[in-house]
Image (tube, rainbow, N blue to C red; front, side, top):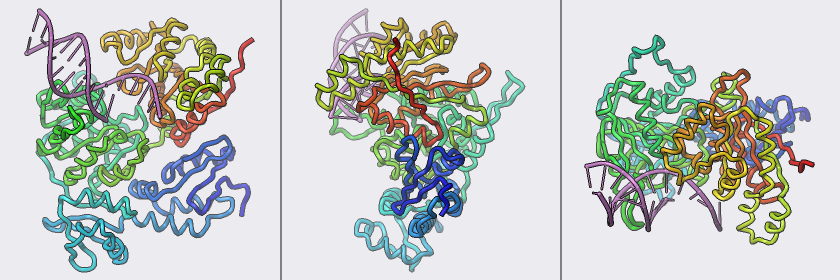
Length: 556
DNA sequence: GACAACGAAA
DNA sequence: AGGCCTTCGTTGTC
């Protein structure tokens, strides 16, 4: 026992980390690789180790000894033997079952005959596992490759999929020789590592790369495409992003515009490289209709499918993905967290985590700005306080979010940063209109035409407009210019992704000197909003951002 | 055939 | 639990 150590390991696989300990930051970085942060009050953070967090860590190349020794070296009261046993057991599970081809046949194999017996005992699996070939192999129908992995993962038996892929239609994708500059395009070191981690054939050909906003995920996707040299289907979250992929592909590779198609509401171009939105794949005119656009998956001999923002992948696309397991798949995301809990389907159907890069590490290397986070607690104004206590529970969150006392905090913060490009981001149109009227700055929400948006973006970029107020459009607008200050005035309940996305708006490296940016989150004190704010921050705290909490005192 | 306006879906 | 944004596909207009 050593009380000076910062970790307490509990037998339910939760870990407590003291935040004021000198080794806090180092351990935060390590734990994030194989455990999930579940609570982050000021003095003591709680992590939880789950089977899935261990499998993803193992798939990304983290050794069992790295995890256990990290715990053993820093545990105040030692590591309960039962915990070590469980970690070992779960981690080793990944790799016990493997899927592979022998000749043209697909097999589920294992050296562990006990595990084999265990899974055979499940009634729900028996229909996939009838064709046994001795004690260590079961022949699998190719059409069950996805559903079987999905089911086994849910039952606690992840499958390492080393089976072959179809090569798909060949397509030469050369990097463009750039005539206009002397500098040929170069992947950054970590981008190369990510592409290599994905491409390692001995580890299976599909998986997910986890990198922060602004790390260049598109470029990594293009590099993976170029390496695979095949017809590629790219799925992404919205039309702006479709256009962005197309632009990047045309500028970075030797492909011409007649080889790159957009599949969306307006055009249904299926080309060797085709870019589509998740929305069109899951579009139906009526609820009882079928998802007719899912046919896109088999309209061509795709050799690679890229799932951009894989944390947004909708359920019907999972189902379609289960059916195309012989096609290589690459998932790209800033976070494996889904607000709907379908993380295990990403793992089994798109693929395990192959590579991750911590946000703070990119910051240290200078690829991201140094962001300070501040939560400003604002007491409810008198009128809002009455309304808050008199309202039904389901209205209270909004009242707290729209607290008018936030206006004077905004004034104060704007005075603190007079010369820096600033975004105010919020959830409620009414509130944002009020702020717009109060500050005189323009607001962009859903019904502002794109043409007008672009004008405002342009002015903001040139520095002619110092302040821009944006609604939830900020969650989607790929082309929203970068700022140095972000003030979040309200948000959607406990969305960790939204918080990360908004912080992402100020991450791009700053040209002026110290490369710093500030993210403010305005929260009504002693309300529901305060509880949700903590939940929202979890992902960023896991990534090493510390929220400094200040209480707003009314100015006299 | 282009494009604005609208309702439905998620 | 609720609010907002986006996108699709259809209809109406020239």
